[in-house]
Amino acid sequence: MKADVAIVIVTYNSEGHIAPCLESVFAQRKSVSQQVIVVDNSPNDRTVDFIRANFPEVELVVPGANLGFAKGVNLGVKRSEAEFVLLLNPDTILLESAVDVIVDFARRNPSHGLYGGRTQTPEGDLNPSSCWGLPSLWSLGLFACGLTTFAPGNPWLDPESLGKWQRDTVREVGVITGCFLLATTAVWNELGGLDERYFMYGEDADLAMRAHRAGYRPVICPDAKLVHEDGGCSDTPVHKLLLLFKGKASLVRMHWKGPTQSLGLFFLAAGAGLRAVISQLKGPSSESAGPGRWQTLWRERKDWLQGYGGEASS
Image 1 (cartoon, one colour):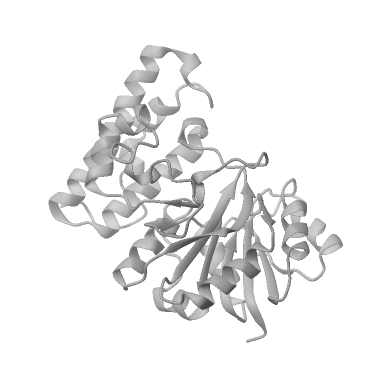
Image 2 (image 1 turned 30 degrees about the vertical axis):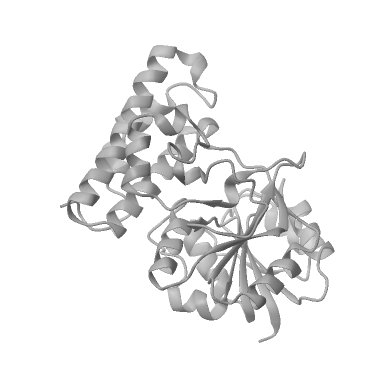
């Protein structure tokens, strides 16, 4: 192994974010040696030229097309030569030697398989998006009824949010998100990396579900901190919302069978339909990220409910 950790960053039109991200990657480093790999999925912007001019130590992978997140990550990991692999979003800023902290934590607690940190806003407030609970029929049923929207953060009515927990204690969780996700290269290879059928969204939850089945217990290390300014579903543009729900449907199709799969897909469609009706009744002012977001999701449900090529619904 040539490095302790390979940091893999997949970029897409990231010229405006990549400088502070990479600056933090190199500034926060202490004793842990790093191999930094950037896979650029955007052939038409200037991210690659900027990195070559300002960060020559970064290993660039330029496929010449948008491969999607999963394929981009796997391509970067194939270039890695390190004990650990760390996925990092280009719109993040590492704080307080986060890489050293999480690598040390993983070495002292090797049974968890996947490791995440504590994401926060630029103002220092919690951004809960570093981890979520695993999806279940219960959580999807609550989504179908609208309760996850009307009672966000409630541990019973919005269980995937993990309640009001501030991500400030060590805790085993369902899903570590791909904005900051550490695994040993051995575990990564054992799990087979990210499923490349996913284009964007859902691939980290899929990895977590496979990790749980393999006996691992993904965990949050609260002392590994970073800034990640990430919007939730309420302000997600329509094209990203469509990808998000295609990822959700793919999880249901690929991991559930029979009546459970059928019911899970029904709950996703019902929840989208309910929100389309409510937003229509409220009028355009209810659509903070553009008019007709939920209506578009509902109209295009036949496409996203098919997922990315999982098992057909029974």
